[in-house]
Image 1 (tube, rainbow over the protein chains, first blue to last red):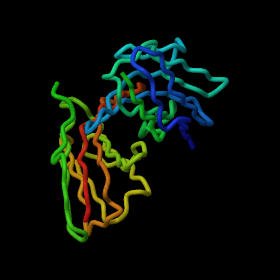
Image 2: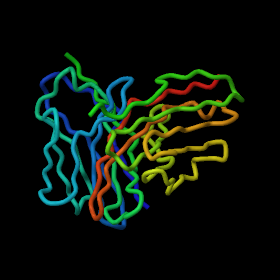
Image 3: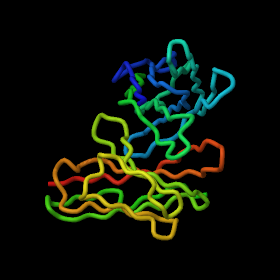
Length: 116
Length: 116
Protein backbone atom coordinates (compact mmCIF):
# COMPACT_ATOMS: atom_id res chain seq x y z
CA UNK A 1 0.00 0.00 0.00
CA UNK A 2 1.11 3.52 -0.67
CA UNK A 3 1.08 6.48 1.66
CA UNK A 4 2.02 10.13 1.52
CA UNK A 5 3.34 12.25 4.35
CA UNK A 6 3.35 16.01 4.22
CA UNK A 7 5.58 17.01 7.06
CA UNK A 8 4.23 20.52 7.58
CA UNK A 9 0.56 21.23 8.09
CA UNK A 10 1.12 24.99 7.83
CA UNK A 11 3.88 27.06 6.26
CA UNK A 12 3.87 30.84 6.74
CA UNK A 13 6.11 32.75 4.35
CA UNK A 14 6.70 36.40 3.58
CA UNK A 15 5.83 37.62 0.11
CA UNK A 16 8.67 37.29 -2.41
CA UNK A 17 10.50 34.81 -0.18
CA UNK A 18 11.30 31.28 -1.40
CA UNK A 19 9.28 28.34 -0.15
CA UNK A 20 9.63 24.58 0.02
CA UNK A 21 6.75 22.26 0.87
CA UNK A 22 7.93 18.84 1.88
CA UNK A 23 6.47 15.54 0.78
CA UNK A 24 7.61 11.98 1.42
CA UNK A 25 5.96 8.86 0.14
CA UNK A 26 6.17 5.16 0.77
CA UNK A 27 5.47 2.51 -1.80
CA UNK A 28 6.66 -0.96 -2.69
CA UNK A 29 6.19 -0.26 -6.39
CA UNK A 30 7.05 2.48 -8.85
CA UNK A 31 4.82 5.48 -8.57
CA UNK A 32 3.58 8.56 -10.29
CA UNK A 33 3.73 11.71 -8.16
CA UNK A 34 1.58 14.81 -8.19
CA UNK A 35 1.15 18.15 -6.52
CA UNK A 36 -2.33 19.68 -6.47
CA UNK A 37 -3.35 23.12 -5.22
CA UNK A 38 -6.72 23.95 -3.69
CA UNK A 39 -7.76 27.57 -3.40
CA UNK A 40 -10.46 28.45 -0.83
CA UNK A 41 -13.85 26.98 -1.74
CA UNK A 42 -12.55 25.50 -4.95
CA UNK A 43 -11.65 22.07 -6.27
CA UNK A 44 -8.15 20.77 -6.80
CA UNK A 45 -5.98 22.01 -9.64
CA UNK A 46 -2.99 20.06 -10.90
CA UNK A 47 0.26 21.97 -10.35
CA UNK A 48 2.67 19.41 -11.74
CA UNK A 49 3.27 15.70 -12.09
CA UNK A 50 6.15 13.28 -12.32
CA UNK A 51 5.64 10.25 -14.52
CA UNK A 52 9.16 9.44 -15.70
CA UNK A 53 12.26 11.05 -17.15
CA UNK A 54 13.85 14.16 -15.67
CA UNK A 55 13.57 14.25 -11.90
CA UNK A 56 13.05 18.03 -11.92
CA UNK A 57 9.51 18.81 -12.91
CA UNK A 58 8.27 22.29 -13.71
CA UNK A 59 4.64 23.18 -13.22
CA UNK A 60 2.29 26.10 -13.43
CA UNK A 61 2.57 29.37 -11.50
CA UNK A 62 6.35 29.09 -11.24
CA UNK A 63 6.35 25.97 -9.07
CA UNK A 64 8.75 23.06 -9.51
CA UNK A 65 9.35 19.78 -7.72
CA UNK A 66 12.19 17.31 -7.60
CA UNK A 67 11.73 13.57 -7.44
CA UNK A 68 14.31 11.89 -5.23
CA UNK A 69 13.92 8.13 -5.37
CA UNK A 70 16.56 7.32 -2.76
CA UNK A 71 14.92 9.63 -0.23
CA UNK A 72 11.39 8.87 -1.45
CA UNK A 73 10.68 12.57 -1.56
CA UNK A 74 8.93 14.95 -3.94
CA UNK A 75 9.36 18.41 -2.43
CA UNK A 76 7.64 21.41 -4.01
CA UNK A 77 9.52 24.69 -4.40
CA UNK A 78 9.00 28.22 -5.61
CA UNK A 79 11.79 30.80 -5.60
CA UNK A 80 9.54 33.79 -4.87
CA UNK A 81 5.96 33.54 -3.64
CA UNK A 82 3.08 35.90 -4.20
CA UNK A 83 0.01 36.65 -2.13
CA UNK A 84 -2.05 34.75 -4.71
CA UNK A 85 -0.18 31.54 -3.82
CA UNK A 86 -2.07 31.37 -0.54
CA UNK A 87 -3.80 27.98 -0.72
CA UNK A 88 -3.73 24.37 0.43
CA UNK A 89 -1.22 22.17 -1.36
CA UNK A 90 -1.60 18.41 -1.62
CA UNK A 91 1.07 15.91 -2.55
CA UNK A 92 -0.28 12.70 -4.06
CA UNK A 93 0.86 9.35 -5.43
CA UNK A 94 -0.56 6.69 -7.68
CA UNK A 95 0.68 3.24 -8.56
CA UNK A 96 2.54 3.28 -11.88
CA UNK A 97 1.61 -0.32 -12.48
CA UNK A 98 -2.02 -0.02 -11.51
CA UNK A 99 -3.71 -0.95 -14.76
CA UNK A 100 -7.16 -0.63 -13.23
CA UNK A 101 -7.99 2.37 -11.12
CA UNK A 102 -5.06 4.75 -11.01
CA UNK A 103 -6.67 6.07 -7.88
CA UNK A 104 -4.70 8.78 -6.20
CA UNK A 105 -3.57 8.65 -2.59
CA UNK A 106 -3.35 12.14 -1.14
CA UNK A 107 -1.37 13.56 1.73
CA UNK A 108 -3.11 15.57 4.41
CA UNK A 109 -2.13 18.88 2.86
CA UNK A 110 0.03 21.89 3.67
CA UNK A 111 -1.58 25.26 4.13
CA UNK A 112 0.66 27.95 2.61
CA UNK A 113 -0.03 31.41 3.94
CA UNK A 114 1.76 34.39 2.46
CA UNK A 115 2.38 37.44 4.59
CA UNK A 116 2.84 40.87 2.97
CA UNK B 1 -13.62 22.40 -22.57
CA UNK B 2 -15.66 23.68 -19.66
CA UNK B 3 -14.06 21.50 -17.02
CA UNK B 4 -15.69 19.23 -14.49
CA UNK B 5 -18.86 20.64 -12.96
CA UNK B 6 -20.70 19.58 -9.84
CA UNK B 7 -24.15 20.38 -8.59
CA UNK B 8 -25.12 21.55 -6.06
CA UNK B 9 -22.12 23.37 -4.66
CA UNK B 10 -23.55 23.33 -1.17
CA UNK B 11 -26.13 21.12 0.48
CA UNK B 12 -27.47 21.34 4.02
CA UNK B 13 -29.68 18.51 5.16
CA UNK B 14 -31.05 17.01 8.32
CA UNK B 15 -29.86 13.70 9.64
CA UNK B 16 -31.77 10.82 8.13
CA UNK B 17 -32.57 12.53 4.85
CA UNK B 18 -31.37 11.33 1.45
CA UNK B 19 -29.20 13.51 -0.76
CA UNK B 20 -28.03 13.21 -4.35
CA UNK B 21 -25.12 14.96 -6.02
CA UNK B 22 -24.38 15.27 -9.70
CA UNK B 23 -21.07 15.40 -11.56
CA UNK B 24 -20.60 16.31 -15.21
CA UNK B 25 -17.13 15.31 -16.40
CA UNK B 26 -15.09 16.77 -19.23
CA UNK B 27 -16.92 15.58 -22.31
CA UNK B 28 -14.43 13.17 -23.87
CA UNK B 29 -13.25 11.66 -20.59
CA UNK B 30 -13.99 7.99 -20.08
CA UNK B 31 -13.12 7.77 -16.37
CA UNK B 32 -14.96 9.41 -13.52
CA UNK B 33 -13.92 9.34 -9.87
CA UNK B 34 -15.58 10.30 -6.59
CA UNK B 35 -13.56 11.41 -3.57
CA UNK B 36 -14.52 12.61 -0.11
CA UNK B 37 -12.57 15.32 1.70
CA UNK B 38 -13.09 16.08 5.36
CA UNK B 39 -11.82 19.20 7.07
CA UNK B 40 -8.06 19.33 7.33
CA UNK B 41 -7.52 16.17 5.30
CA UNK B 42 -6.69 15.28 1.76
CA UNK B 43 -9.30 13.72 -0.50
CA UNK B 44 -10.02 10.01 -0.04
CA UNK B 45 -10.97 7.77 -2.93
CA UNK B 46 -14.55 6.48 -2.89
CA UNK B 47 -15.24 4.90 -6.26
CA UNK B 48 -14.60 5.18 -9.96
CA UNK B 49 -16.23 4.41 -13.32
CA UNK B 50 -14.80 3.51 -16.66
CA UNK B 51 -17.54 4.58 -19.05
CA UNK B 52 -20.73 3.30 -17.40
CA UNK B 53 -19.11 0.47 -15.43
CA UNK B 54 -18.34 0.97 -11.75
CA UNK B 55 -15.04 -0.84 -11.39
CA UNK B 56 -13.92 -0.20 -7.83
CA UNK B 57 -15.41 0.88 -4.54
CA UNK B 58 -13.57 1.87 -1.40
CA UNK B 59 -14.41 0.39 1.98
CA UNK B 60 -15.32 3.96 2.90
CA UNK B 61 -18.37 3.58 0.68
CA UNK B 62 -20.94 2.05 3.03
CA UNK B 63 -24.23 0.50 1.93
CA UNK B 64 -25.88 3.90 2.33
CA UNK B 65 -23.84 5.24 -0.56
CA UNK B 66 -24.57 4.48 -4.19
CA UNK B 67 -23.10 5.90 -7.35
CA UNK B 68 -24.23 5.58 -10.94
CA UNK B 69 -23.06 6.66 -14.35
CA UNK B 70 -25.92 5.37 -16.50
CA UNK B 71 -24.84 6.53 -19.94
CA UNK B 72 -21.15 6.87 -19.37
CA UNK B 73 -21.42 10.63 -19.14
CA UNK B 74 -22.65 12.34 -15.96
CA UNK B 75 -22.64 10.56 -12.62
CA UNK B 76 -24.72 10.78 -9.47
CA UNK B 77 -23.72 9.99 -5.90
CA UNK B 78 -26.58 9.30 -3.51
CA UNK B 79 -26.34 9.08 0.26
CA UNK B 80 -29.30 7.53 2.03
CA UNK B 81 -30.19 8.16 5.68
CA UNK B 82 -27.46 10.75 6.09
CA UNK B 83 -25.46 10.89 9.30
CA UNK B 84 -23.50 13.77 10.78
CA UNK B 85 -20.30 11.92 9.92
CA UNK B 86 -21.18 12.24 6.25
CA UNK B 87 -20.51 15.97 6.42
CA UNK B 88 -17.66 16.58 4.01
CA UNK B 89 -16.70 17.94 0.61
CA UNK B 90 -17.51 15.45 -2.15
CA UNK B 91 -15.19 15.85 -5.10
CA UNK B 92 -15.59 14.47 -8.59
CA UNK B 93 -12.74 14.04 -11.04
CA UNK B 94 -12.53 12.83 -14.60
CA UNK B 95 -9.76 11.62 -16.86
CA UNK B 96 -9.11 10.19 -20.28
CA UNK B 97 -7.55 6.80 -19.86
CA UNK B 98 -5.91 5.39 -22.97
CA UNK B 99 -4.59 1.87 -23.33
CA UNK B 100 -1.13 1.51 -21.84
CA UNK B 101 -0.98 5.11 -20.71
CA UNK B 102 -1.30 7.14 -17.59
CA UNK B 103 -4.09 9.60 -17.05
CA UNK B 104 -4.37 12.93 -15.31
CA UNK B 105 -7.41 13.51 -13.14
CA UNK B 106 -9.15 16.88 -13.38
CA UNK B 107 -11.24 17.85 -10.39
CA UNK B 108 -14.52 19.65 -10.09
CA UNK B 109 -15.24 22.36 -7.49
CA UNK B 110 -16.89 19.90 -5.13
CA UNK B 111 -20.19 19.68 -3.28
CA UNK B 112 -20.01 20.63 0.39
CA UNK B 113 -22.47 18.58 2.44
CA UNK B 114 -23.49 19.62 5.92
CA UNK B 115 -25.65 17.20 7.91
CA UNK B 116 -27.38 18.80 10.89
